[in-house]
Image (cartoon, rainbow, N blue to C red; front, side, top):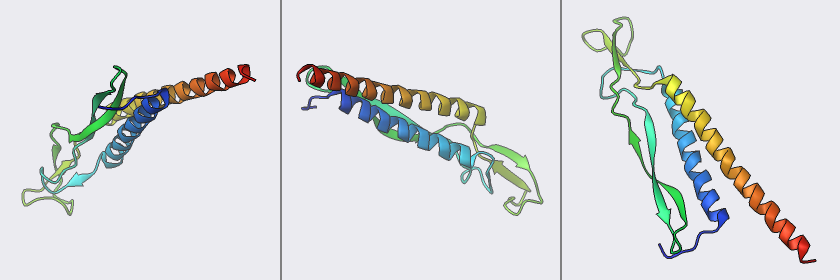
Length: 134
């Protein structure tokens, strides 16, 4: 990559990546417990895959490389009264671990807040440097 990252670039990109992570977690939690008429139609949780991006001086930041679908299988449940049930009376519940998604959400919020703090610190240092020059 032929660019130079500043502290603002690094933290801004990291915050953007964490926002994608938070959005996928929110989508997973919103779809937890949903029912489908077949295993193929059942929702599977989403996970972003991050990739390290380096500049010419060895400074690194992150970017979202892709968003993958979990390999976890949806759970089959016999519920013949459900209008989505197949001919055998089965429905499939979304493949989402709600507890793990809540942990993911807390972790994401902390990572995002860490980057906000980095930006606030950098801004404060720049302001102090400018005041020293007056």
